[in-house]
Length: 321
Image (cartoon, rainbow, N blue to C red; front, side, top):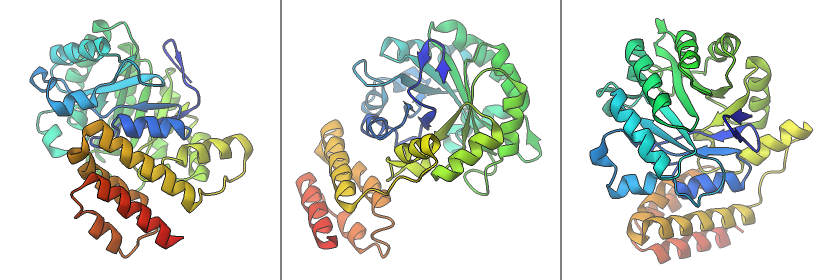
């Protein structure tokens, strides 16, 4: 798939997820078959840009792959400034967040709350597109609630305003992450516009990925929560789409290598204190199927030393073996 001058290696994209798609996670997914990874959202509030959290979220010039960074806000001028700031710091694509359903974002009229104000959406799209020389994309939802689905209208507006690709999560804001994704709405958007459309929502297996591609006719797939603790899902899907055959699940030895490497990268990226805390949720996702009772995860979450985290994980896998 092509976004402006950038041709993606394949049609599988890592969804931007706050607190998840940091640089270690993005690079991990790219190594395991993703064609592009979008960074977690940056606030358009300039007072937030120089905090440690925002600096960690920024795309870096030496990062691998096509560098896409998502921005969130509700004021067109501030969104334009944020887009320019991100480009100056290495972003090759700017993605506009109009899909986040979280209350603290929505109460500022940002994220999916913008779906109630198409007039402001149009201003934001036009202003951001005019502000930067890189492609601008949009991630949104099907509407605010089931009685107010306006994704086709927003998609047509986005195309008219110069947006170069659109990712659609097949749920309304009211649905949050519950229920089943609305692939009919995604198909309707694909049929209504000519720019690339990316389907998002419930794509949790190679078979589901093929179904969504075939049913909606979209150009690419965006995967978020199913990749948590399972970054190899991208290679599994890519293999199935290419061959029609299922790829063997990774061995426990490979899971151990991937998990330990990920935790060590988190320690290095954030520093040992913050890194070990962030590692806890990732370890919980990785081991959810293996440690169903949760005894190890409970003990692991009490560890306050980075080196002890590594030792505990090595002991866990030795015991499993």
